[in-house]
Amino acid sequence: MAEYLKGENYLCEFAETFQQAVDKISAFSYDCILLDLMLPGGDGLKVLEEIKKQNKQDGVIIISAKNSLEDKIRGLQIGADDYLAKPFHLSELSARIHSVLRRRQFGSSNILQVNEIQIDLLAKSLKVNETLVNLTKKEFDLLLLFIGNKNRVISKNALAEHLSGDMADLLDNHDFVYAHIKNLKRKLSDAGYDNYLKTVYGTGYKWEL
Amino acid sequence: MGTMSKLLHKPLKAFIVYALVILVCSIPAYYYLVDSIWLEELDEHNQIVKEQTESGFNRLKEHGDDLKRSIALWNEVQPSNKLLPASANNQQDSIYTVMRTTFHNGSAETDRYRGLSTYVQIHGQAYHLSVETNVEEADETVLAISFITCIFIVLLIVGFILLNRHLSKRIWGPFWNTLDKLKHFDLNSSYRIDFSKTDIEEFEELNQVLSKLVESSILTFRQQKEFTQNASHELQTPLALLKSKIDLLIQDASLTSEQRQIIESLDASVARVTRLNKNLLLLAGIENKEYSADKVDLSTLLSSQLELFREFAEIKNYAISASIEKEVWVKSNESLLEILVTNLLSNAIRHSSNEGNMTVALDQKHLTVSNSGPVPLNEHDLFKRFISASSHNPGTGLGLAIIMEISEKYNWKVSYTYEQGNHIFSVNF
Image 1 (cartoon, helix red, strand yellow):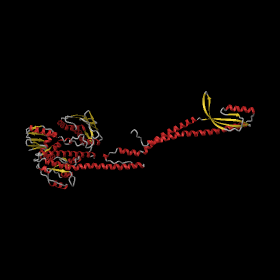
Image 2 (cartoon, rainbow over the protein chains, first blue to last red):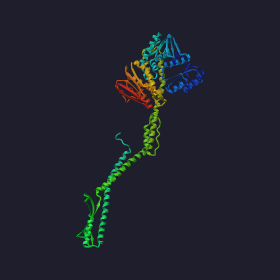
Image 3 (spheres, helix red, strand yellow):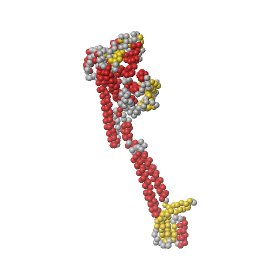
Image 4 (cartoon, rainbow over the protein chains, first blue to last red):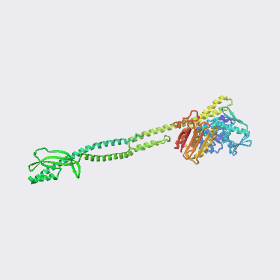
């Protein structure tokens, strides 16, 4: 996990037990904390409570092997930014971290600028060189996933899972992914944006910058 | 069930038949008894008449013609008795029974008579005296006895049935109680059965044995569920690792296209196992009652789900038509209801070829999803786990089992029919 994230130029630190985690959050400030609920030595949610008690602004993404609704609701209520159930694709994690960091770094601003494109996260709209490009919700989701995983190959399965969410049993159909990617590519190039979206033969797609 | 009868009815039938036989047999017995008492009494009576006649005439101070006239008058007044002069005196008395027809008020009547033929001495002269007394005829006696017996038979049978009903309510009460509790027992609910105490030894023993059986079933069932859940949980972490490693591996630019293809099929398999695991956990979760229930607007939920599927359907060139009644509120957990709807819809899409069609209908009581398909599915196995209708489909084989499980949780009824080339799944709320 850390290896993948290092590729995104993130600096990672680990806490292997409950106590280490509590010590580290007290001592340092982090941009984003990935909190596994199954920490040896204590309940992961207690760490989250500790962070909030110390009035820290660290972003928190809960990672849990238990895909339990109650944990999710409790975690988000205490103040976690996101919840991710194991097992997940690293690209998914990376996109979520990206989103948490973005929210923290940009504060109230919801505009994301990458080269010639400008993304309004609130209005869910995309501008290329100041021209508005109409994207469907799925295409917009895809775009965010790619931007959160620059220069990384994202497998078709990961894309399918990202797109269909709970419609789990439809994931197998890669035509769905293919159709959306094709549309997204076409819309971007029609708007005059350089084609950064590359097909990696037999594997998936990559956003190259 | 035609030949089945209740336990208590079996002895009842035997009792009734036995009582019938005994009572019918008692009819001739009573007849002979009554008849012999009758005859004995009448013989005694005839004997008394003889003695009274003899002493009566002897006390009269009449002789010769006067006596003859008196005897003639006596004979005249009592037609059934005859007093006639006899030649010899030492002849034997005899008793007999005869049937005589008399004319009474113009109609013939046959009566039975008990007679005494005897000899008396009146003033030294021997007379033959015959006394005959009317006896009830045999058939009349039998008739009367039979009539009374029939009344008793009816009384007995009615009594038996009433007693039986009363007893079955009282004695079998604990049994029905136990049976009722067993009928309503649901292994899923994990509630132990509390059998009520009874003072009948056999039932108490039955209850104890059943309690033990139920308890061990619950225990086994719980262990099995926990096993599924624990196994799935344990699988999550290695699966996560596997997924991450694959994600890392595909970043390697030096991979050949052959290697990439191998990795892709690996990735697809991992994705499938992940989904399978997720569904198993979901199934275990539904069973373990981890969900709270609210009133959910199914109309809105269905519409938004359909919207997601429409995008997919467009790519597959697949027609979806829907008629959704507004404001259909269903009491359930929103996530579970969403899963049920998603599974129904994706099931329909997955099992029809490209350019097929799907119809969705929702009203206050039913949700019906039908899709075109060439062959009817095996209704019997359809909702079991890991029974995929066709071998080439990509599903986990748990979709319908999940639908079933959710429906059972809320007491909804799921049914499958095949009509005119359409698979029709419907849920009755």
